[in-house]
Length: 153
Image (tube, rainbow, N blue to C red):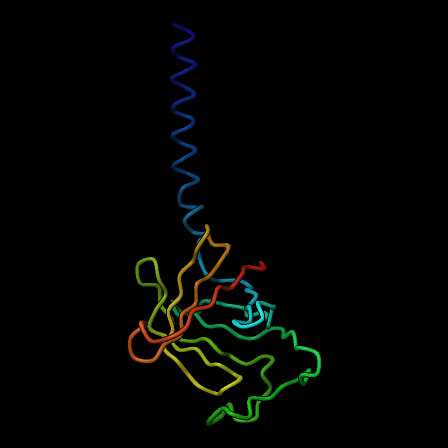
């Protein structure tokens, strides 16, 4: 009888632990944090983007850039329109307006500071939140390009 009581107590403790930990684990899966962007062509790191959530919407700002040898260490967005024209790329918000929709984050825009072009964007966490699949597109997501960003923190 004593052995049965110990097993029952262990099962109850395991169930309680799962109930307590499950919401915490689910809460960690968010794109909020610092992400390393990777150049499509060279495979080299291009910069760090910090994503934050403000009132249920996600935005990303360039926190650090990794210029290639010979590149301007403090580039400006000389191909951007409006208020972004000729503004420093470092500190610029390039990702905005995304909301969580199921497993994805959609409904926002992403700026390519090299071309000054703005695209629709959707994102999805991968590999337990270690990677972020970012897809910029025009019209439907079939016509666009994807990048994998790597979580830094």
